[in-house]
Image 1 (tube, helix red, strand yellow):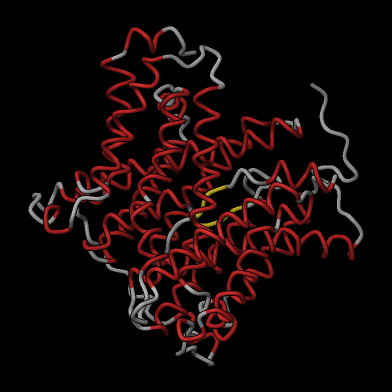
Image 2: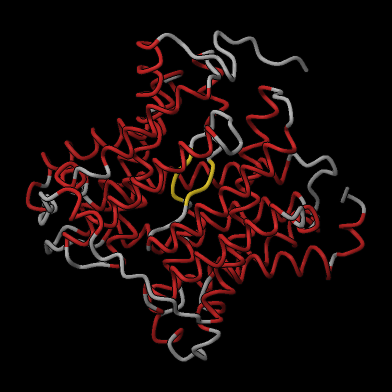
Length: 436
């Protein structure tokens, strides 16, 4: 297959005006994901709005840095980078263990990913991730975030809004799908951004009593951003093991994203790009852990954007990274964005997870060896276990041994371990017929 015909190639720089416009498009694609994930995690960690704003500032900063270092020294491909929803799963499941334990585990996971990738050891682990395993992992992310999505949609500080919020979310999600079905190009690429804007405005008009702008933004820009940088190591084995499993899934996500653009553009030195990209993802997650924020991953959104714009220049993403860095030092802007209603955030996350689920189903059914009853069993048990674990009441999870609670109480981790057992132990003979 010949490389796609492009107006601007990988290492070509468009004229300045076009460079800025394309950069703004990339920014419009990634900023909703940063806001949504940042708002969710900040809400889990902090009750004080000022602390939530600082946390989201840090995510903007890490994301902007990730853009620049990957484009200039990493894989050097036009890939969108943002906070990893796979790590969001781990944070949600481990939030009771405390910030120090969570972000120590993220730092360790990033360091392990860097060592495995830089030393070439990751190739041995890749053999574990067959098509059914990858498909199950993609679906597990969606399933294990369901309780949190439900809480975002139905919880409200205003009495009596639970049912209206649920109805609003259902109508809103169907509208997003309806619009997605009929738009293309720029509008489809930036659909989440428009959904955030339209959903927020509509919700405020319908339920003004349920809307509150985040307060407490620090107007002393630099000082407000760098305060609370008192990282403390806290080694909790259960939390670390839980996040190491999450990082296995993150690495496959990262690898798939790099190869998706590599397959489209056919750049030279692809193995080196993969090694540099994965290694830098590890380093960036290590720094995110030290910084006390969720780590980044490469997204697989880029091929569609490249095809629609006819531009594969990696330099068009640099303005997006610079804008993200600039916004990280603007707490009033972050505070305004933090005012997006939870029900809108939950609805859009539901839409995103439906896309994740669709990707998993495509991966499962498009495998070269086909999809049969045994494949269904390999995937079915892990998915059912993840649902059961994800909806366990806190009163039951609290009875688990402390060291095992982050593992046995995490539906994603239990699901990943279960699919590996089903695929490589119980149905080992079948696996041998489709492994490389």
